[in-house]
Image (cartoon, rainbow, N blue to C red):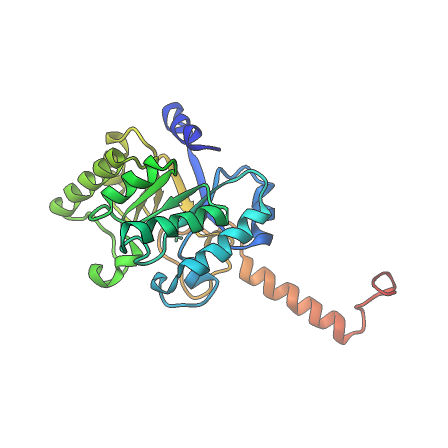
Length: 261
Ligand code: KIV
């Protein structure tokens, strides 16, 4: 997958599949699937490190996980998130962050919002680096948004989102994530753009879908947003496997002869 395949998928009406990935082992497994692309999202701070929100993600954290994912895949397209405020410094500092993420193994970067980012996006794309936009519920703005809420519900905020999408396309983004917006608004935005949209909590009309890997595997405990479908009951299966392991130890059924030197 490269950015032209993203465009082609939209043109041909084929859906784009994206999933988050933060580690080497998962990357190796995902590499054997037909998934189109891997997002090393700043959600890594919550999913892998237990922080309350994505504000805790740092450039070093992102690079560490991008590098691990990159070592685990042979040819998957990797998108690396620019973490909180890392693209709100001076031009040269912003570019230095992009350089770090790309040298860690990303093939493109993603950043949240349009206001104040357009010139930077243009500079990054003119430097030959694909940029994915992200609008709607943008978790790095959580305190300004007043919580994890569906965006674009009023006429004003819907028309603001439509405008943002067009501006991001104009600035050079090759695709845009639409997070937590009403399905019909996502449809309108998708139809208004030449570039593909990838939805999370944005209904079925976007050009693709993204989910957090741990959510779709049912590994995330005590938290299930409406838009998540767990395709496996990972946490129960893991607990059952650990219970069988403990039992095998206690009953001296493990290790067996074949496991011994
Ligand atoms: O960090 C992340 O997981 C994301 C997705 C929600 C799109 O940005």
